[in-house]
Length: 203
Image 1 (cartoon, rainbow, N blue to C red):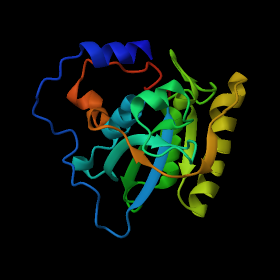
Image 2 (image 1 turned 60 degrees about the vertical axis):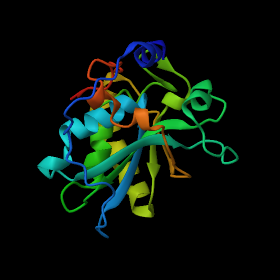
Image 3 (image 1 turned 90 degrees about the horizontal axis):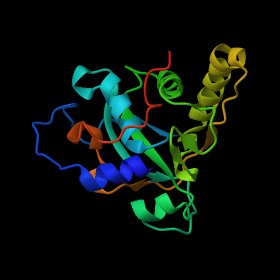
Image 4 (image 1 turned 30 degrees about the vertical axis):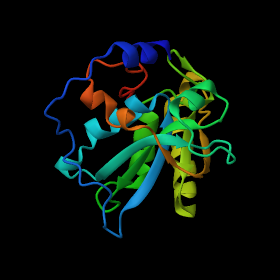
């Protein structure tokens, strides 16, 4: 977390020509679905999904938002400072709007596992705390079944042979709160900003 705080304090935001995604905003397509994942610092989670599924290349992801979810339901409008304190129990997460006819939910779940360490409790790299937990927040009953199936497959193929166990939560999505504007697409706007080293392709 110290690295991220330094990035916020010392990174000069430079206006850039910015087109990682050709964003269309939230789609009006009634077939679009939502996937919600937490895997540590939400800057890196959003960044790696969009690097590999840029909307302008029609790979299935339509738009993303980073924000806070999974916390104390009595807490309204949590902000970055309160979430980082751990007091609200919210996770930093990314909310992905996707077209399931192009990319399936199962593929996104597997990609989630590929791009962080799902075997550490409340930790990714040097970032520790409940806000950095690994979690799949499901939005439909079908997503629950798919998430559990993919998790079991990834566990057996990737982690059991190494004597490791996936600790990622699979829980129903609750209230979503968008993070502050400066967090949105942060690493596209600030390429030298802090990035958790676990946010990479692990296989």
